[in-house]
Image 1: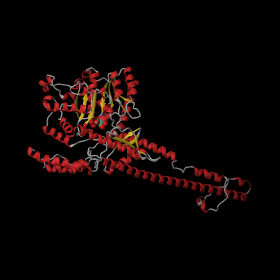
Image 2 (image 1 turned 90 degrees about the vertical axis):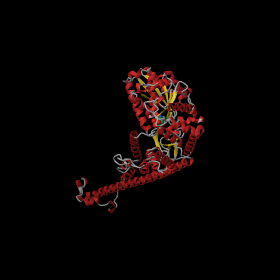
Image 3 (image 1 turned 60 degrees about the vertical axis):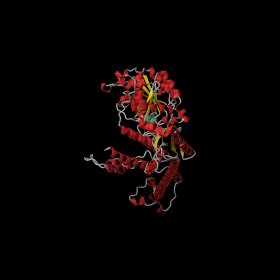
Image 4 (image 1 turned 45 degrees about the horizontal axis):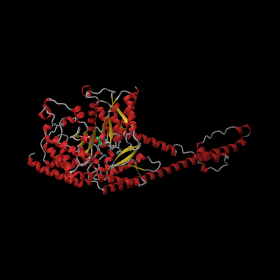
Length: 626
Ligand SMILES: Cc1ncc(COP(=O)(O)O)c(C=O)c1O
């Protein structure tokens, strides 16, 4: 493609994106394709000859769009947001156009220095400690993801706690411990696995009623581990947990970490960028205790993936863990120690010029624009929580300091609440106007409404609220109808059983009466003999109604009444039905937990995480007992 061709097609692509943003609200939010549909619409082999650009663009509409879930849709309320924006896309386009590889300062000084500078700006905008600035002992770097940042924090912590020994010897089993809560993102456990510590090294610290890590429980666990000869390495505190945006209390966790020489890593993947707003900074009071900190501009700060902002208070621990200098990378600036080489701050060697898009975003919106973006979503979430809190159909189940609201629909007694909630979720998502995800809180299914797409306005949140209520009403009526039908069927079954019992009793009474009449006729001892069973089946099958009513023993009334009080054979009593339902619900919850393990999402992962971490902890405890 010549530069002139690029100019022409580049304009077409930019037009396409602008058109897409203009009409994104018209698509069903969640892609409606089935597994394999996208691949089935592609040729089995790559083209032998190059194709016209128009043909490629046509397939964008034909193949890609139908298979796209529209994260920029104003009705996207799932997981956490994944913002993009004009300046972000244009910055990224320029980065792609420049095509630089910023692994070392010398390979493109602007890539390194712009990144250092923008990360310093952002540290200031988020009011992070001075030590995180490049002018202090630490500094910031753009990583690909918070998952990656969590791993890097652990590697730096291991380097510090082992005084560099892990570089040479690696890690020994049963030596180090890492502290999380059941609400911590699963990537921390993954980091422990990758770092060679294994899941057994993970300690799951108890949470309080708001699902925040308990400082007392943390201190107790660390003390117990130290007493047993373990070396605590890292505590991962979360500001804004994935499931409910719970906030671990940094100001209380920090001193405990310091007392035991443990690295405090703060995972603020979603929530951290919100502290661009001064009134939200209290959420991370105590952040000055942190040794490292991660937040994703690619979630909620108008910057396209990937743009994780990662800071450390002591860059020497980080570069100590990751620096390696093969001969071919040597250069005068590095040798002089005068520059930062970002390859020593990350896993990979190569790196894109990601600071460009951040630079564009921060300059285009300015601090004020970024604050307005966050404030708008937080305000919308508070409104939604207010509406739901005042509505008898929903409970707001967890604190909602930011833009995530967790709603538990209320259902009538006897309705399997989890099934009903998940049915409501599917119904809403199938409708195409909105997209939500779920989590579990206290073991019960809950709807997560994460407000944060740049295109979402109050009207979209109002529409979501209408759909939630309509969906709830529709399902509640449906369940009521089902329950009514079931009650009627049960009553009918009871009646039928009662009738049968009555008929049987009457038949028996008639037989006894007939036998009594026949006995004197036969006379003497024969009268005391049992009547011979009738050889004629028709006689015993004759409908009781056809028979002449006979005198019945007084006891008949009583036994018929008892029969009526019994449930019909095969019919479940209400109590039994409920137990059965609870059992089914438990089985289903376990199935869901298994399913969520196969397709981890920010919200779904939590169930699996809790399970994994619970198992990890159980395994760890067993190990300790051994
Ligand atoms: C608290 C937390 N940490 C880490 C992550 C992982 O983020 P990333 O996709 O940047 O790896 C998430 C994702 O939602 C998260 O909520």
